[in-house]
Image 1 (cartoon, rainbow over the protein chains, first blue to last red):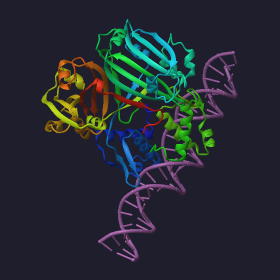
Image 2 (cartoon, protein in one colour; image 1 turned 180 degrees about the vertical axis):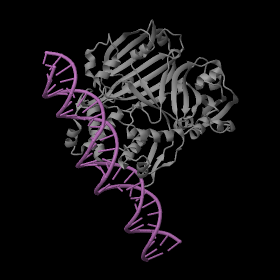
Image 3 (spheres, chains in turn green, orange, brown, purple; image 1 turned 90 degrees about the horizontal axis):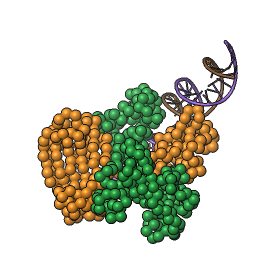
Image 4 (cartoon, rainbow over the protein chains, first blue to last red; image 1 turned 45 degrees about the vertical axis):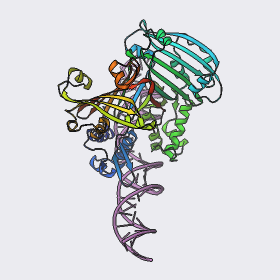
Length: 241
Length: 241
DNA sequence: CGGATTATTATGTATATACATGTTCGCCCA
DNA sequence: TGGGCGAACATGTATATACATAATAATCCG
């Protein structure tokens, strides 16, 4: 789907209208032709025109009002899609050898801080992990993770000495909701030592909270040396390929 | 659309299937019932079932193969939607008074660095702006911007002394593609002075490149004091509200 | 027995049709 | 003149139908 090469009627109409909107020929607020008119214009049925407009509405390019018609919407918030890959994939895409090391693995009752991170109301057992990802000889990323054993009891029997917990978790919790916080932080003495950078060097921190259908799953904090890493996010109006 | 309250057949089927997938009842790789079977199961026509499956496929929850059927897809990349609001909206959402000041406004020919930032192959006139956004008494964000006058000649007659160029640009270039780079940086002496923070304090930097239909529009770099700001991004499987 | 051909099957796309729903406009009457 | 009622209208949703397409399964034949 959305191959770009498909020359179906649907796609032709869609990209034509999309083109008019992104080019500014049909500016925000413009009322596009009624479904029946579009059907005549592209010599198709109203159903097809309707599907295309529904598609555009879902993509956020237009807004539809009964009786009034369909209008090009104002681009309100600058949205961007951030794709967060596995650390290993990230490192390998830089064409550097990847290695992983488990620094710490503690099973304990959730502390108040843990409960806040995982958004837990009651106490529970958590697995506290610290791992270090290397790119070549240098530390690439520090991973501090909490796993909620109430929702992922299988984690207790995993030792995570060979492979990172992130990929293992994805295979355990099929679909999940996630929330990210991204900020900059001066390296503390400990972080500086671990990541082999100078004290107070700027670091990029990404915190992720993940929920599955049965509750909070994991909280993880990735700390990257800031001068060696950047996140890239992209946004294209209608497309999603 | 996607109100959650709508009880149309379409929505009921959709949320039912979505539920089975996110709950793990239908794990990744599971082949869901054929369209005709779904039609029988929900007592609807195949067209309706088809629309629902198409919808799910567009949302990325399932993959469809002719003859074989539709399968729950593996959640590959951790995607997250980053919503980047205007600085003013950001400040106001913190319930702080907002103020804006233009620091610099220079019209000049694009330097090699400018051309790199804007991805320009030929030379062109650019508008070089530096603005400072305040939250209450304190500097909130430093904005350094280049506007390509070849694509937005109207910018030349704007003085940007009263309102930030970001919002003005959105009204000029209706729909656009954008690319973001996010990284951490230690404050240089100059930045530290401007933002009223200590030298070498960690800053969160967001760079955005924007294209319209007629070429590169603008390049902007936002620098935030890192300890006072975080980006938040969210991801929910099927939903988009 | 193996490779080519054909049949079957499930999805993909498009159409005509039908009726529901929410707006808006205009008409009618107090 | 103004308020309300109803007709017209555009979209929303759903169905039955038809044919195209791609992939697999079945068959046929050398």
